[in-house]
Length: 260
Image (cartoon, rainbow, N blue to C red; front, side, top):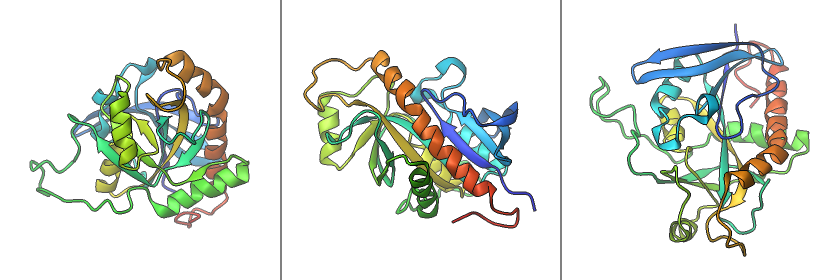
């Protein structure tokens, strides 16, 4: 039996996975629009890679077609999705370069299509449970891969998703912190909930690249130069975790559902 492909979704700074071989670019047409993916193998394991922002970071976070992206992965036979989110730290104990394996989220977006079930589909209105938005078994795989790769990662973290593309105000970050958020980003929702609706197992690694507005002693504005410098220094840690996770999966036979 052929193993289902692993889905990997990434955004800012992650446009090439490095280890992906025999790649082909493909446009997948779904009921919600087109999604562009790269198919290939990594350690012999089939992988479908999707970059949220498109070529040259041309799509802002509030205009990403999250429904088409998730639907395309499901249509291609993906069952498990590992996402990478670049974030700002709300928890002052987090520093640029730190990693978290997320376990909950806050949705502070305002204008995105957030569901496949908008009342126009045959299923009608569907209310999806989000008690465990990030799949526990897949989270365990990420944590074990990080340990094997020697990359420190926090077990758990709350992701506050803002609309973007502007950065957040100090008041918004204070509000998110009061609600228990650890990091701020612009792309994690509705991606995670759409994956749940599509029946996919989904987990996410958060890479901190800057203090969020008003966090820490700095009063300097957030800049892309600052973010890109951290990405250049820390992206390899994320890729090492992904490489170890894929390598571990590749050691299992085709009859295995997953290593977890």
